[in-house]
Length: 300
Image 1 (cartoon, one colour):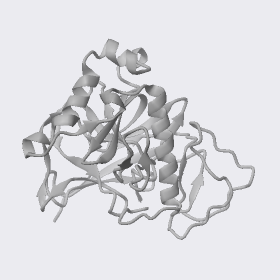
Image 2: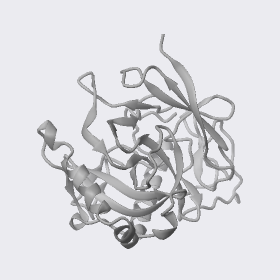
Image 3: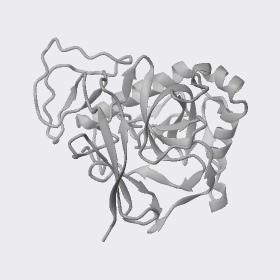
Image 4: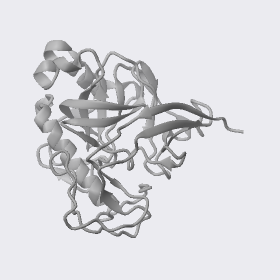
């Protein structure tokens, strides 16, 4: 029998101004206001959908999230599910808010630094748990450890039908936006951190655009020192180059070509990173409103 254990409880927020997916249909008043970063909230009138989760905005959601393992680590049936305060499963991709306001965002750890099991949110499974990626029925590992905490921004999506004119017309990779968190602490799978974005790298993986947002957790000792790409170079010298080179080369040991990077092979600044977050949040909103075809993606 597969093992099941609750491994941690993570405080996400007692209040947030982000958009999320409601558990039941209801009507938002016409004058309802949702704040937050830029245009992260959308049409405030009723959005009753065919899916089980109508799209809406709310000011309060999800004060606590518990992380529950099912199955044995490094096995095909291993999953890390997220539970709300009542013990019900929720989606880390859809149900955890993106923005906490004031330029602070939630970040979900998939791969702890100094590890190499290729963990990822299962975007095609109900409640999108974290699992280890597979290829031809075998578990996937990076050829060497990743040196930073790696994971995703909830409520974002890189639309595979949209070409980016800034990055060689490349189309999105059909996944949430990736985050490389450069803080000193090794985090845990499923941990939810409050981060601030610092830079963005436009990786092109087999023709698909796969953004890497470089960020730092607010509880890191150096967080107060870094607010933009120049600060990263000053206080974490060589880190941006190391991140680019790691993601450029990690497939080469498997006989694949190196990945490429757009935007002149250089990291974009914080403002550009925020622009990417905003655009991919809008794409996610269209996805969950079923304005675009979800394909095999799970919306709950």
